[in-house]
Figure 1 (cartoon, rainbow, N blue to C red):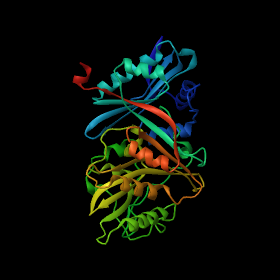
Figure 2 (figure 1 turned 45 degrees about the horizontal axis):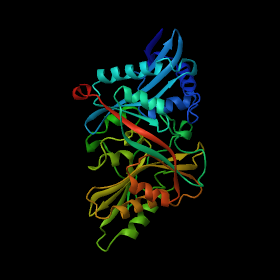
Figure 3 (figure 1 turned 30 degrees about the vertical axis):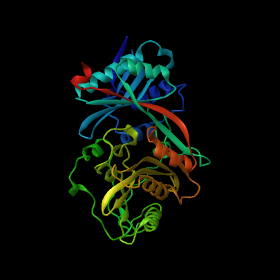
Figure 4 (figure 1 turned 30 degrees about the horizontal axis):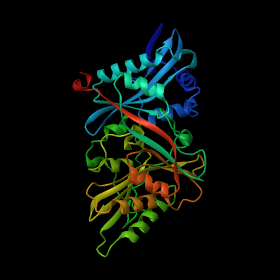
Amino acid sequence: MIAIRKLSECTLDQAVQVWNDGFSGYFVDMTTNPGAYMTRQAYEQLSPQHSIVAFDGEQPVGFVLNGIRMAGGRKISWNGGTGVIPAYRGQGVGRKLIEASLDIYREEGVDTATIEAFADNAPAIALYESVGYVTRDTVLVLRKAGGAAGVGPSEGTGESRGALGDALPPAAAETDAAAVRAGGSAHASGGSAARQADAPEEGRRGHGALSAAEAGQPDGGRSAGRAKAAAARHNDAAGRYTLRHGTARDAGLLPFYPALGAWRGHWASLPAGESLIMLEDGKPAGYALYMRVYEASGKLAGVTLYQCEASPDNRDPETMLRTLLETVLDGYGEVSFSASHIPSSRTDLIRLLEERGFETAHEMVWMTRDMTEEGRA
């Protein structure tokens, strides 16, 4: 008899074991360990109270990891990983877990449920469709050809972030093209980042007059230097353009930040993420959201781009995107470069990435389900 329990009722060893067994034979190697598992829970705001494990007696045989947070004024849920151990596949355990998760979303007042699956994973997609999920877009993971291997996020439903279990990259200090400034750390984790989504501005960092190197930035201020150089190339006589270097949350506060998208590409999933915001005549006109990954020694290992957007009324969006990509991705030397969870509908951005040598590594469907009363009718 299959029983559903909260993940919070399981031991860490049980949770890790059912994860590894549940992803046995998956499209990519999803093997994890206790440290990486806990890091992923915090980084991706997955909740043990909302996540569930299927038991046969005292044996864990399947799981769903869930996260719930506010985004754009709506309560959003994410299925961050579904797995069933091989001996129990094809017996309805996955459906039971998905339906139990939907019950949790209803209890928590979720407005929109989201999930991702490999585009080739037809059985999983069919299951999700059978309970009301609809494919809204496909999202791509791209890697720069010839880059260093083994760095950056692994792909697929419920991936972990490579080397992040060993060394978490610090968040950037905010900078601009006029003066490199640095403030406090922006290491939000778990639900704290979500709670800050609509926080007042007085909660943001103060600014000092230190250089990036003096403030202890791991790249010695090279990001700020690139921002200054790019801004100089694109400034006119009136100094119309400015590049400002900040935290992931700074991008999330922009009026044209997308309210709904892939969970792992959202600023709240990137507590160590950074943003580069381009201002035109003092007003935000575009931004890039990205994260640098470091080895345990502190050496830069790779850069992953998550978003690159121009404001809807931007007069020259292609130049804006090119400048942002150049500033974020150039000048690092032999490190890995990837772009994660880029919507396939963003043909403009994908074309520019391909021009820079990026190639599609994986394609996933991004699915949503309306959990409001109207959506249940």
